[in-house]
Image 1: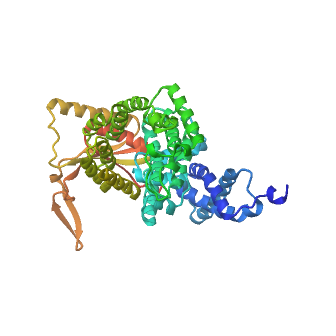
Image 2: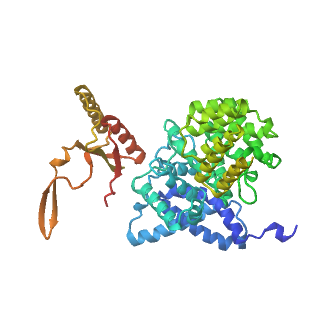
Image 3: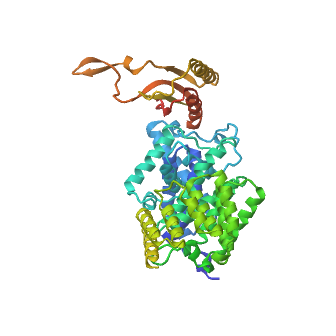
Length: 412
Length: 119
């Protein structure tokens, strides 16, 4: 073993990668300690500057997360001392309601004490808009830069900076608490948290350079699943993301156009992710407290089981959609249920269900109708449905795909 | 602890299904219960219902003189019907009180934090 093996070279990019991976937890801890998001963010930023200087020279500290927290905390304390000498006012620090266990007052009742969990519940407080929830989560928990968050959601960086600043101001001014909700509040408060993670994943899925967001969403889901092992919907969300992610590489062609489930190269689906996702689904089934994420995960688990699209257990999928419809009767679920019915009972039965839905402004509704009409041999109806779908498609890839579908049915 | 304004918002002309005397009594009773609950929880600072906006008078400085005009300041259909000022630990606690209030008065409640006084 030579010296290079003993102390692997760390370049700035590697320091950045490790730092991002580890520093979400530090930010969360420092927000609790100092009761202020800006102080925590600035301190971690200063610690990053120190890491960039010292890690390549001295090597990676044995516990990078602990190093970041300690370094950032010391920097923040130094800075607060300087400022309080200047203003004789250090009590201003506690603006966010600080966690009580630090003040020597009895610990809160919640089951979990990880700071990242407090932070995600603060970021996803229902008093903040969904846009603000997503932006804060990515900025604070995932440690994306403001520019990266802006690009992920196709808004200008100053707009995103403003959105983040406004959200942080509201957290401080209105005293959005920094704590894990108590058990009786949890069901209602968990919903936006899971929705934000799911939204981050889907934003990654639909943007060409989105793989970063997809892995951030999975990382968040893993953290949540580890911190809330008794919440079946958290496990369900993680399984759903893993099973969806297992197919992501086969979802688009090199030119960016979409490949539908039935035409994907199943040999390229990621078996490791599928196995992990399916194992979670099996544990959820045993627990028998179904919810929308668990059921969607179960549906995806059935797809993942089929070596070819023809071997898909569609009746199982219909049964799962029936359950999903019973607890989440949204038109989009009804649409997917109809598609599954189409595989079992044929396109006419599916079309009858689809035509009852009030989804005229949803491109997938028209795309589904188009496909069913084509299968029924009603080519001119199919063509106009494809055109309507293409006109509404949210991405270029989907628009191209639908345009091709339209041409295919015309050319038949 | 922080203080929050819970304001009850009404839209002029948007007359909700007129309440029967019985319903009015019921709503009034619920509000009394809520007020007692706020007081015994130590959350009550002040609260009350306001007369209609056409009873309002606006006073402003104009060229160094005080000018008085009849009618409400805001020329909008929405107006303040009443408000509470409460003490609460944090926004979640304030929203819990607002949820009880909206259930009593059946009107939207805006929750707004007061600036912390420089004490």
